[in-house]
Amino acid sequence: MAVNSGLKDILLVIDVQNGLSSVANFDELVTKINQRIDQYRQAHRPIVFVQHVDEDLPYDSQAWQLTTGLHQLPADRVILKYHSDSFFETGLADFLHHRSISAVEVCGLQTEYCIDTAIRVGHDLGFKMAIISGLDSTFDTKDLSANQIIKHHETIWNGSFAEVMSEPINWV
Image (cartoon, rainbow, N blue to C red; front, side):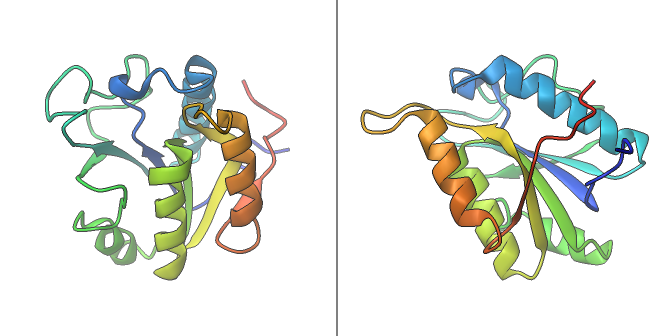
């Protein structure tokens, strides 16, 4: 499999922030997201980081910061969002349209909130949405484990709202 196999036009890295670092498998997730970021960079494809701002992740706080070690460069575009919707009043759709981007891969946090919303809204706006299976995470709840929530959402997304891709063979 070629290194850029399965890459879309752009990678959106959503809410990989310090204040959410207690989600299931966070360190492994960051490692795999970094590997995906590196694949996009090698293929000269854009990466956009989305950062959530709210009362639990106040602007410019330690919790709000993108997690240490994330392969973000100073020149990377960062979009702030104030809702679970990465497209709502952020300029993201215009950014994608102006660059003739049609295929969008997402990864990050939280599966049932910001990732699900990005996939569904992006699909509704006409983008071909994609995610690698397990390249998102969330918290366990009293009724469901994080893995159950992730698998449930991937089943709903696959073929309806997004392409759910299998993990690439060539993780570094």
